[in-house]
Image (cartoon, rainbow, N blue to C red; front, side, top):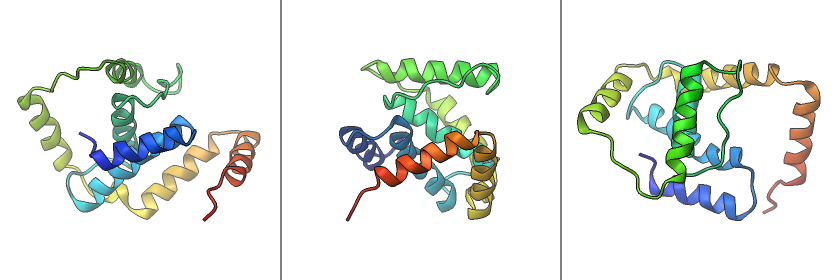
Length: 149
């Protein structure tokens, strides 16, 4: 369950007209924080990010599921369910048994997935998969839309 602060920050980003990926970043940041604080672990940086994105979709952030060939069919199906859950007003609680089992499994995982090195490695790997033009456009947009203090 995402904290109220993360949800509020995401809503603030939405009001400011920031992209859905920026809004989802609030949930990913929170998930990384959970792993670092030892609330639970993650098998890899990718898993920690995936948990954050799942929470974002469920909170109503408009992130599309990955395209075919980008992720496994199970991941895409989970993302589709998360998106539809985010559109519904009344959220049915997960059964206690299932929630405890999930948390128990995550608690057994390591904490190194949220290390600076692991996150840096994941970011570089993700960037390498994108074309140079796309990376350049993202950098230009970041410079153009940077918040001034």
